[in-house]
Image (cartoon, rainbow, N blue to C red; front, side, top):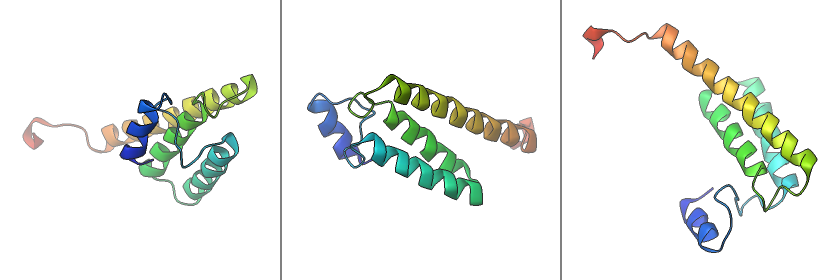
Length: 102
């Protein structure tokens, strides 16, 4: 999502979660599936962050028009947040902060 699009969307009364490049729930789900597949093949924190952002886009009122989709969006957000927390825990255990390094 481009920053200019975000500002325009907010100015037009659209939520900050809405991405005009992915205007429907189907578009967002396709993007989530593509990112998830790439993540499964080669996990990275960047792909996890992207998947979390896309899950947030799925919860935009302009896209999300059903209770079922809302439940899916919430579940995906929680799952990808958990993945990102795991990355933070791994980083903390691999590179603990040390006074000499600061």
